[in-house]
Length: 554
Image (cartoon, rainbow, N blue to C red; front, side):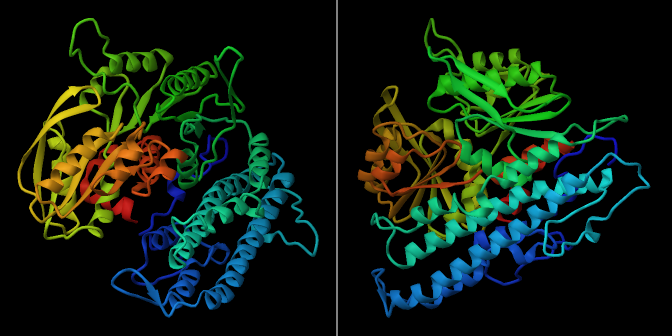
């Protein structure tokens, strides 16, 4: 490691969930999805510092009572539940905070004890002890320093996964107590409290800055460029999730506006010879977010970054991909040219509106178009009748997408058929007559599309499917724009539930209007793609259905 560029959390140091060397905090059968994810992210030697999610979940289960056919709970004693649950919850918070402080104290001692010494002068981190006072490290050699630097990157993951655990267990509490959708949920209040807990505080960011400022200069030949993550303002939650999954902190950057509305960008960290990943979907407000992306790429290029990769979960202007009438631009191609002109080296997208957009970029700018449908397959398996389900394409152009979703359902043990809705548009955003090719009689129908805008097409299709005899109608779309009046239409429609990816953040007004929308995360998929790009592995594994299912389910 000495003398080379070092990733804060290199690929070789990230243990997969199936790695036998990973020490797990629990080995129980029947874990829910988050419990499995938490188990997979526990770092060896840190097992005692994580939230005991299974214990808290067990308390909720033991006090949940019995559920009748109409969904009502009997033999439910809320006072008994609160008396056992909340003391344990506070104990778990104290445990996580204490473990966080202990690790930060160790990192603090190491960074202050580091001096550029020779390779023979070493002090082992494991030999450092504290006798009631702050840790003191007389000398730390460069290799030990880099080891601590990598572990500090893992702390980003540690904070994120614990925060997710507390958030999800409180959501389960609200569900058991029947508080969801009542406005009396305790989860949002507890989430605000988490912002002020020790383990979510600013100390980790301060330590990361200290370590970066004392990094030894890069010397030697053939070093691997350091991975750096930059996030625009379009989807900060997704960027934070990707950062936590990779164990690489988001780089500080100033993004604002001048008085006349111009976008102002300033990178707050050196990116020379680094590989920079800019996470920025170009969703609403499209032009502001697109300009942020372009200027971030330009800033990195002008700061001598080795490579700049644009991670664009949602590609704005994608629907303007051809000339359907005279005197109009092909805006999807023009956006691609703008990105290339700014100096982007590679682009990573999720479910482009049409695959040929990849060809709008030149051969020197490869484009990875990831499939998001795999994140929803097991979710829908738990929702529908596996022997009586139909995957429906809302138009002829989406048949290939629906067929891919159908194949995915078959891979998880569902036996679907395929149907297609033929629609005739009156104008953009407004649909006239619809016809159905296939049968949905007495079946669960899943409408599959790439995006939902005003939901006119979707809701009309759902209502038509109900008239054709569908028992229940669900929808899956990668990108949920939900522009007005989408939420109101969905709430009044025959749709049971609409599932989207979190490529675009869900606005508060949408969540207040309808409870029928659920988001699933593509964070793990994007993190794996970025890791493959950084380490030189083939990204094609993410287009293998079985391998991708293992990834998103692990």
